[in-house]
Length: 279
Image (cartoon, rainbow, N blue to C red; front, side):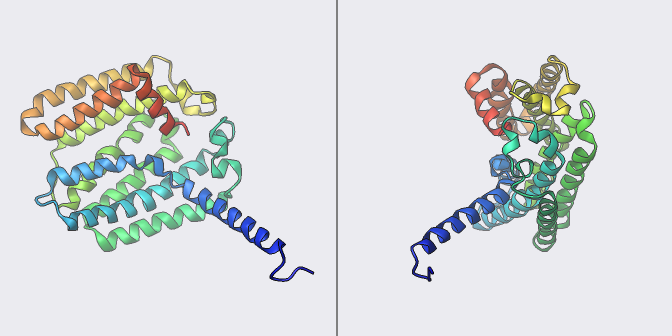
């Protein structure tokens, strides 16, 4: 009989470690760290409006990242994957996602998502102002409505996907106890709408797009037209408000030119966005 020193023991231990890592990796995959690039909007809001940029601000941004992106959005993304599991299972790549693949059970994922969201709200109430907590709640409501109902409503699904981006910027400004002009939030909403339209066009040209019912709501011309209108409105708003906030509008216009416009006309930019959005 093999004892503790048996040659089989290290092998079994190694296998257990591999399986344990795979399990942890599956749970972490639900948080979708690749989407956390959107936290740059929170950072911009804080840095543009902060009276002082110091270590204390860096620490508060780190805490917001942990609460907002890792915990709150980790829970939101997990609930989205629960809602999308049937469609993901029919998709050639998304079927490898933890819930669609069965690596994580639906019940386990639901408990995990709820725990992340509760932890996010609890910590936010302990660490941040009521206005920042209100932004957490607004984000949760918009995403919940999208997952439960809005995703299947033409055009409204684009708006619901987009409205959380100005909210991110607002989190950053409220973190430093400042309130941005409404025109800043409108500009970010228009940019987000253009990017959401681009995302749907990218997904529509990706193998297996038929698995996502939302994309069937649109004709091939709908997304380019809606994106063009949003970008034209953004250009008009930027031209009118540029003297008041040249730094902010420089960031918004450059982002729009590289991502929202470049994604339509530049193959490398479109490929990069496709890697983020369709995996």
